[in-house]
Amino acid sequence: MTAIDPVALARDLIRCPSVTPADAGALDVLERALKPIGFDCHRLAFGEGADRVDNLYARIGGAGPNFCFAGHTDVVPAGDESDWTHAPFAAEIADGMLHGRGAADMKGAIACMAAAAARFLARRGAAFGGTISLLVTGDEEGAAVNGTKRVLEWLAARGWRLDACVVGEPTNPERLGETIKIGRRGSLNGRLAVKGVQGHTAYPQLADNAAHRLVAMLGALLAEPLDEGTAHFQPSAAQVSTIDVGNPAANVIPARAGAVFNIRFNDLHTAASLERRLRETFDKAGGAYELSIAVSGEAFLTAPGRLSDILARAVTARLGVKPGLGTGGGTSDARFIKDHCPVAEFGLVGQTMHKTDERVALADLEALTDIYEAVLDGFFAVG
Image: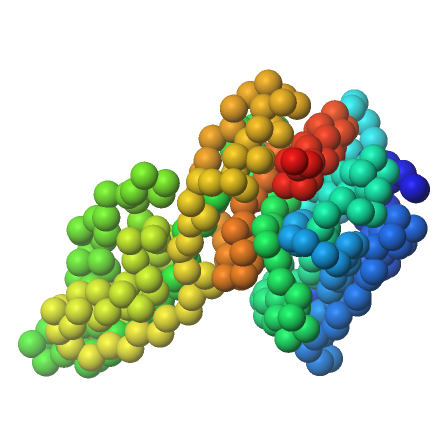
């Protein structure tokens, strides 16, 4: 059985400048690593033109439960490359660290997944009693329309199910082993446009100040807590992102005013229930307004159980620490996978993700590979 070096594979992946949605050869690199160890690789492209996204679903086995590793090879832009100590796509090693865009989020974890599968198969052989698969998209950092969601639809159409999944997002704030994520908050973006009547500031009785009513609406939105949080989620919270009036004159009452806000919400709410609450709140303020809602994901929770237990035991055995079970942070593709099987997230340290000089410790790559291998052992336990 061909061995896979997680550090070498991570470097090869980082050297592909796969800024979303470009693949830049990253999935070819992964496919070349997986085929020699027996994986059947399915390259799946969805979308047309500039919206086209390349994805990979690779599997070995065929009988018994299907354990899936999931992740993405697309990365965010590097920004001004002159700001980097090491070139963002050079994958240089220095001071025990692997440097480069995607090292933490999340090409490093993908390399660990492949290496762990290779080691597991070398010990257990092809007859291990199930299926191991990797679902890797090039559309997580972007619109997330033609990536994981479409691959899951493709799997369902073929009658291929997933029984458990670990997503390799960088879940650890400062050191490996801190946090397993068993859910995520939902995210709702609201665009509020208030209409009034323009007028002279000296004659407010002849006008309807849209800015005043916008401020009143936002004040009402922020005045009352949405909830007090739950056992696994922090309190839901609204944040105003921008307020725009576009009025250059100090003596003119504006006829229009707008704002954009975001609500990160826990599983006490749905996007629909929040929209009802928002409209009730804004209606009480009175006057004409328009509200548009965009939802990138609903809140979800995979209750603590077999999957999180297997992960936690693997982390503790390798690192000697007990990880916490969390739900913080932004959205991830786990929001799609949770509709198909239990899902948890565990990956590298995320302290430098999306930042200049993104990097991961070489020791963490080796440790994460060991942890993923132990997860496979736990899931496909003999006896």
